[in-house]
Image (cartoon, rainbow, N blue to C red; front, side):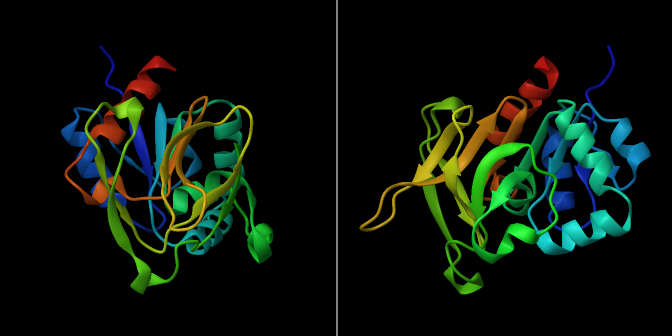
Length: 200
């Protein structure tokens, strides 16, 4: 049986943390830095980090177009935090010009929860992952302001005096979260994504 290969985009961000979880789940987790690396994986994780830095490096290294084509062709892809921003078709406010991969029919606002000092943790109910709440870490996190008709909302955060805010979504083979599951001991989001890759 050929081993499942879930690459981790290794331009900037929480690369090692995702690799550690994926290898612990029994899948190969090579670093992806070139189009050749990308062609050799069954799925891709875009880690949390600085979305503008990842986008700039993707342009400089000639990776942006290959990433766009791979996602458009159906490569299962999971983005956490910065990865959500990079997968969004639209960004709110003045960030719309930022280069990104796209493919996810959402509008995302960068740094929506505030600056680094406003980072927080909370428990989220995510029915797709089972009955136990998931501890979620939000660091300069984005949120989803609009989700298209084909986008499944996986999780929301209650905001005082406001509607619930969308922080996790899935659209076909694309999965994205505002938070960083790689920073907790809970592997269920990665397990879910690996199942998605294997079913694709």
